[in-house]
Length: 346
Image 1 (tube, helix red, strand yellow):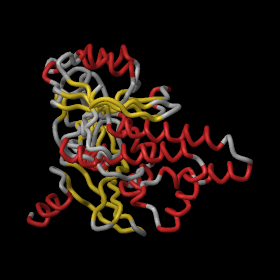
Image 2 (cartoon, one colour):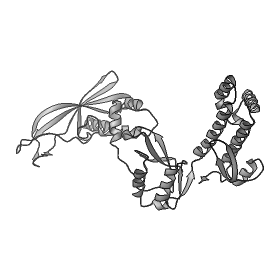
Image 3 (cartoon, one colour):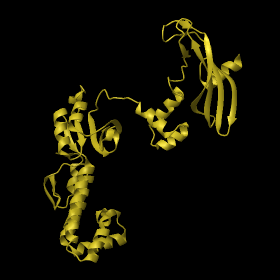
Image 4 (cartoon, rainbow, N blue to C red):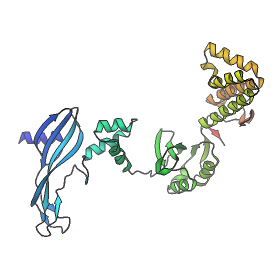
């Protein structure tokens, strides 16, 4: 009796009796049968424990002792004496129409929390990548509330035949809140409108997209819109690139190709340059005065964006003056007015 109880405790299945255990290669095969019980007929509701026949069902389970685990369940098929309905006995650890245990499904779902590939996950769980994806697709979750600060952006994907999806995150706690199937304004409006606490959202971090900005003003009227720092800095890099492209068109072919190959060197921050790289950059800037001016503005703008407060901003700015707006043109780079750093407000 003690051996039976310890066996049940070891395998973790209640009312299960292990009849045989064997090891083949890197797999552990456990043969078992469930305790005989009275079941209710799914057709007429009559109670019965009359056995019609037995079937051996091969079930995958979580790994045990460093081996893949395969359960060979001798499953009963009962028959109702009143309506002659045949049905399989109820097995608590096995979901309906499945050949993998509930705890293996839970293991796969929990493994998706980690940064890993589908192939590695399926190898650990001893299932196919298709099975792992199918389990993940059955997960349904929804946010019941929104944090005070949210961030949203789009990314290229292929969900539901849509090229772009929208990701919603909590930047303060560094958590993904939800991934929406597309970036369409009407669908985003419908999604955010269901939240009763959306008026309590204080800040919304987005890129410099006009449609996103209009949407946020509608669904979050009390929130302050903040331009994501990455997208602001990227505009500066693009503006500098346009200046480089315009200037190199004036050069002969060999020098034009040299400037084109050196684009990453010019975009690199001065403090990250080696001595040799710094000399190469200085030689290029001597050729074009307009490129030199754009290069200086780009690097000074980086200093401004690195400022943690207005005091440090003033010390970082060349003439000691704090500016409150930055004007970035795709054809030139100019600076004017007051700039608020850290949170680049529209």
